[in-house]
Length: 485
Image (cartoon, rainbow, N blue to C red):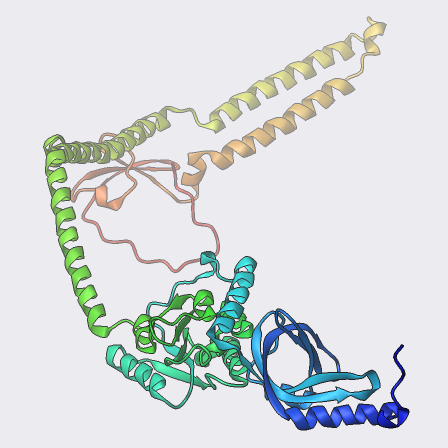
């Protein structure tokens, strides 16, 4: 049976004492260390601190990044990436825990970087940021070219030289850091800033460029914030990052990818000489095509012309026929009017004057009145022999006679107003030639022509000595005198 060792040989510690001793031992033994592992269980707190764990196949080390160190990290911590964390071992006595206080992060070799890039590429690919349907055509001849790169170095100089040589355009540089802490944020802000510009300052195309470097140097162009800014840019964007063999995620999101910054400038602007040569070739082709079209049209016209009737002769005959009928019509109408006027002039004297009809009607009326009075006298003389007739009333007969007399006088007045004899009675005369045709124009009277003048009370013979134009009359408001016919 074992016996316990004497108590005097085992030191006794208070809890705080042993915790402090362990703390001092750990911190003094290790100091600053570099630990390789995969980030897991990452948590960001509102205070700005980041808590995470580093693990490998056999163990896990809890770690913390204080707020003051987060902004200085070269690598943004994310779950699943393998990193090398630099810091010191610290203990948390309240919970008897130890942890790594990290103040620096770097990727654990290119393998870790490539794994992280591939993981982000797959996620963005599933979102559709790399779809070919999102790609836009570059403008033919941009007036302003925006460039996102460092203001120092050969990249911007190569771009300026290439554009000046090919076709001078205005270049608008947005200087940014192209690697290191904060580079990704600056690049994304520059792309979005160009998209917000308006007016003459707004570029027609954007070039995002950087020279060659290691995978870690190019990591800013693999960051999600930069890739999303390129995909969401309202302006067509060309990426030219690294050398021809380098590929970054911004290349998948851009509208065009150039192997070098110089190639990006050549892609953005055509060469003036190439444009002039293309223009000359196009002009020559258009002229040749125009001549061919004209020649084919001329041949078709000649073929069609052979099948057409002789239009000039047809038109000439129709025009001659039209002129002949027009001349005949011009001569026929005045002759017809003249003949009708002659007939009217010859018939006019033969027409009985309304006064003659009126006189006959008045004589008839007087005869009827005389007969009526005689009959009435006989009736009165016989009144004593025929009493029934004495009661006969003459009122209706007299009323009827008055009505007929008034109507007859109205007709007489209307006939007098429209009779050409009434016009003659006002001092006018009817002029006719020797054949009896009425004359209405002085120009139609030949010198020495015989004229017959009809007045209200008879006719007179006259000879025309000549004609002269009628004096011009001042316009008057009252109506003109009506003609005889």
